[in-house]
Length: 134
Image (cartoon, rainbow, N blue to C red; front, side, top):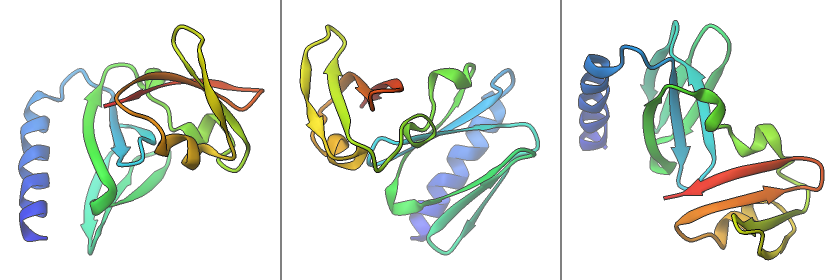
C-alpha cells in the first residue's frame, strides 16, 4: 500500500510540473468508466484505500485498487463518465465504429466485461457515448 501511495505522490508531483494549460483531470477505473474533474481549486487526498478528489463544483472518490489511470486533459468533453450519459441499470447496445452491432446487454457493467482494447459506441436507445478501452 505504501508503494502505491509513493507512486501516486510522485506521479502527482510530476504532473504538477507539466499541468499548465490542462483544465481537466481524467480518472479511469479498471471497468473503463471515466470521470472528468476541472482542476481549478482541485484537492486530492488519500484516505485508507480511497483517493478522494474535490474541486469547486463536485467531489468524487475512487478505490485505489480500481483506479486504472489519472491524466490531464485539454478537453473535458471528450472524456465523460458513462454513468453521466447512460443509465447504468438500463439495457445497452454495443457497436463498433463501423456500425457493426456487437450485442445487447442488460446494463453497462455487463457490456464493459466483454470489451477488449478498441473504440466502441454504446447506446441506451436515447443517448450514445463513444468509449475507448485501453
